[in-house]
Amino acid sequence: MKLVLAQLNPTIGDFDGNVRRLLDVYEEAAAAGADLVVSSELYVTGYPPRDLLYDRGFLAGNRAALHRLAAATGQTALLVGFVDESATRPGRGLANAAALLQNGRITAVRHKTLLPTYDVFDEDRYFDPAEQNTPVPFRGRRLGLTICEDIWNDEDFWPQRRYRSNPPAELAAAGADLLLNISASPWWLGKTRTRYEMLQSLARKLHRPVVFCNQVGGNDELIFDGHSLVFDADGNLVAEGRRFAEDVLHVDLNNAAPQRFVDPAEEPMVWEALVLGTRDYFRKCGFQKAVLGLSGGIDSALTACIAATALGPENVHGVSLPSRYSSPGSLSDARALASRLGIRYDVLPIEPVFEACRQQLAPLFRGLPEDVTEENLQARIRGLLLMALSNKFGSLLLTTGNKSELAVGYCTLYGDMNGGLAVISDVPKTLVYRIARWINREREIIPAACLTKPPSAELRPNQTDQDTLPPYEILDAILEAAIVRGQTFDEIVRAGQDPETVRRVLQMIHRSEYKRRQAPPGLKVTTKAFGIGRRVPVAHRFDPLASVQAPGRTAGVPTDPRPSIP
Image: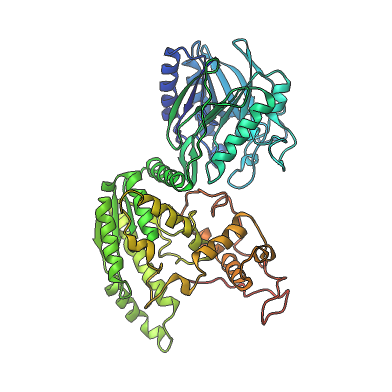
């Protein structure tokens, strides 16, 4: 059987564009003698459509697009994901579905069995699960049609499973001799290897070829890597799609030679993901130009590199906003970076505005010492000026804060948190440095001083981040343990971390949820990002340290519930 995998980048709700792009691939595949063209999960609508599924006009557009695709098919069949109606009652009335189209009509439809409802997934909110799934006869074979999560529950691969059923195994037992999976599987660090090993294990266990066709592209905070995979019945990899780019794979299952799988290093993978996510966020939201503050630090430097690559340097505007506390080195580093990237660069000193604000507030602040209020005032002036540039020139403002800062609230609401996209908000500070060194692997793009000088917000004399935070190597280790692995205070301390440091970090995480709730969308590249996949209440009185004895404190007495205000 000759297959063509259409690893494409659909836009949610762009029915005409999605159909047109798929038909371009289909027509070329049909001319080349393909038996079957395979597209991705909910390709017709784009994934994830979320609450657009409650809009009847959206659902009607989805049905019309499916019928247009069906009408365009001939002897070459097309497998495509769409939203079907579900007759299950009581129920939600919709199903995440795959349709087999051929000779101008819909010849078979199968529904998704396993509906993920965890982390960034919320499919049980919208869809009814399939009550049964049987093989589909096709050209002398029996196709087992599955959709994304359906293949992520094999008892011989996963030590702990979320569901009781194993759809691929059930289809194989029912006579399916080829397993097809259409997916919209978001990417994050570690998923490339896991997905490969899982699919290989499934092919070997069931002694069936396994075909996995994945969506590619960015949709809001989610980034889909593509990287479609095909395995033969012995578990050999025989075809592999490009990572983070559209691709059209031609595979002859009868004459496919084994290939070697290579799992790239983390730094280039995260880089490619962030560039794709940024480019698609702009393209799909209708923006062309970006503006960002260039502080001379490592975070804004990395964000500028990503933006220049994603959008083209001619579409990126970097602005330095120095105050009385900004070092000459910060300005020279920002200027050097902008020159090397070829982006526009301007300097807007904030000192006149800062002094005017101080004078305006002086009668009310009389007799009070300067504190974090004046530090935040500088950050908010910068945010004000950057938003003015964004409004005037129609540019999207990028925030430059990293995951480590966002986790502990080391950021200023309505200041450095202003913006429409938080490009590196899921990148821990230590990983920021690693990616920056990777960028500089052949020549110095990011000034070396950005990698060596102590990180600082430069909001008071001689300030460094470590005046307030633990060293980033320690902070990131604690954040990984607490946020990603869900470990408790005792577990983190037993792993070797200082108890008082762990206590302080957990309190900062706990008290900063109100800030994260107001942050712009951030691109997800780790297993647990701040955003729709982490839903913690702002107003609550749970204390994760209530049972931990601290110096000068009675066990069981809550810590100060008031949020931090940096």
